[in-house]
Amino acid sequence: MANAVCNAISDLSYKLYSVISKRDGNYLYSPFSLHAILSMIHHGSTGGAAESLEKVLGITGTKKAAAGYESLLEAISFLYSVKLYVVTKVFAQGAIQDDFSALATKSFFAEAESINLSNTEEAAATINSWTDAKTESRIKDIVSASELTGSNLVLVNTVNLKGDWLIQFEEKDTKKTKFYISETETVDCQMLHSSERVKYGEDLDLESQVVCVAYENESIYLMVFLPRDRMGIKSLEEKIQLKTIPKILQNMDLADVLLYLPKFNIESKIDLQAPLKELGLGPVFDNPEFPSVVDGAIKGVKLVQKASFGVTEQGTDVGEAAIRNHFVILEWLPRGGGKK
Image 1 (cartoon, rainbow, N blue to C red):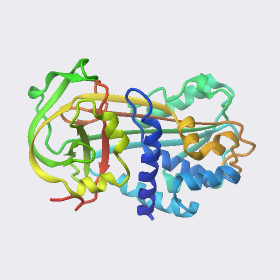
Image 2 (image 1 turned 60 degrees about the vertical axis):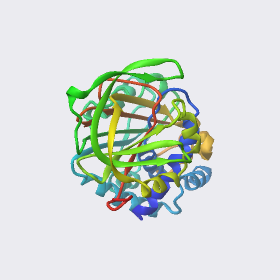
Image 3 (image 1 turned 180 degrees about the horizontal axis):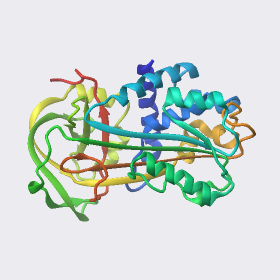
Image 4 (image 1 turned 180 degrees about the vertical axis):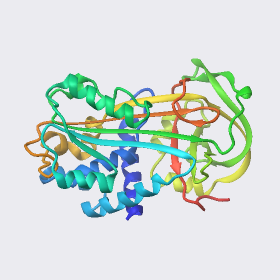
């Protein structure tokens, strides 16, 4: 069942990316944690909301999703040498139903709480304080009081990955380098340098070089795409598809690579209502029917996700440097994936 959930998450990832990538600038989101929280509220939905959630989430049957997530999240909790902060909570104006609260805790490792959302200042402070504590201050201020106006169901979703590289970069080799953000415009950024043996490949269809930078837990890689064309990021975004990643991994080999990797930090906050409605979840927001989540009628649903990701000499966490216009995919590879 965990495999079915993983496949459904991947499918949602590419569908959502096709919508979000139309935006300018940097963006970072976690399809995994988003799929989890939507699967969770799917259990309490009826009518058009339930139908649209089942279609977009790609899993038939709420019990199957719950069992799959329980297995998947249990496995993630035992990952060694990395810390994945996945923080999910439902805040509701009315009383949370006991069955839903128990499901959230058992199968989705999540929480649910009733608060006074009509007092937006106090509610925002409560939500932000909880998020700050759960992420060890890595993610702050996920919502503002103005964003809560008119909502009586708030779905909070944050994700942050902290882990050390298998082979760390030497700080003495980090140098300020010009980074192109257009054909002629550059910004200064700190560039990590190393020469090491890593998984490497070239994809002719994507016109890109690809490298996997391993964490201490070698089943997890940072997968980095570098277009051959300096301004090839848009073409890459348009061409990359769900089937692309496994195909690329199968054709990657260990190679000695001179690696230049920007030192950067991204923090991205996305109001997911518009992109999810574009994917077909309009009924969730326009006619929310969640009788098994909270007592009383739901008048407005708010779904925000805030994610942070930074690359340093030691690994990934919240860093200090920032650049624009790069494309990074974090891929969890099962042992034996790709060529050795």
